[in-house]
Length: 373
Image 1 (cartoon, rainbow, N blue to C red):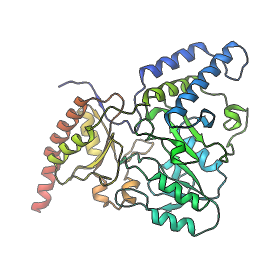
Image 2 (cartoon, rainbow, N blue to C red):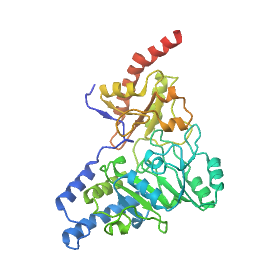
Image 3 (cartoon, rainbow, N blue to C red):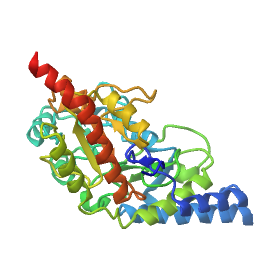
Image 4 (spheres, helix red, strand yellow):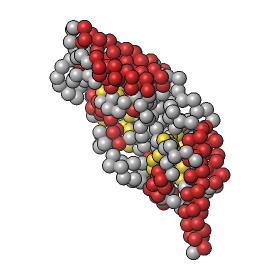
């Protein structure tokens, strides 16, 4: 068996695409401040303009609607603070960069598959005449569950609300058309689709309100002050261009999940009843805690994540699974497997073999002892 590492944690971060690296190196070598009017400044500006077109094309936005940021977290914070709405409604399964940005937000519940309860959203919107902002992600980072953004926009518009959508996990993995969805704000991150970390964007619908959260120069059409990260933005643009066609993994998730369920019929796939991203599987391994799985698979050369991992790298219980009503003991056994642009079939085969060995060695024996007791 090959000793090379198998990377199946693309929802955390996807490896840098070679073409994106080349674009970054070229930009770094060329230098120049994009606000300067001399030839080096104009060349830097041209790189940003090209990337703006590439990122906009990925999500069906207009280039002028793209505001480059330091990542998805900043994009989410910029939208939530900049929309100018004191009343904010967010789904219970949002990323922490949304939930913690508005700690007093009204929480929209989800069903057992992690999909927003539309009736509850409608009731919440009708409970107050105050103009609101609704923030719901395109796809969940843990389960891959897709949200009914079109229906959410319809309900929000009827109540005079603006809509923000965190599309960090969906971009490059599922077709996204910002104007087709009808959202006002759309957050993106480069490193989820093979671009560099530390770069993202907020697409702002023309005419939607946005107040800046920082003061300085007039960069990004006075929407985000500070000299642009030319190299990072150039890499983001190239990665967005390469991600436009999506991932070539049709049928892989079904094969993976079928094999794992054949090994452990009592395993549970979270969000299985909802439309999901093709690259994401969140599954329990009965009798084996998530941190044990992550460490054991890592020793086998396979990189995956628990259902949730905080910024310190510690495994914590998933707030998403808790919101879905998953029992704590089951949630503690959740493992996330996420494919990306450089995944291969043999990666899945190695994961299945290692997962089987771990389940037989730890999970099945622990469950047998529990039943005997």
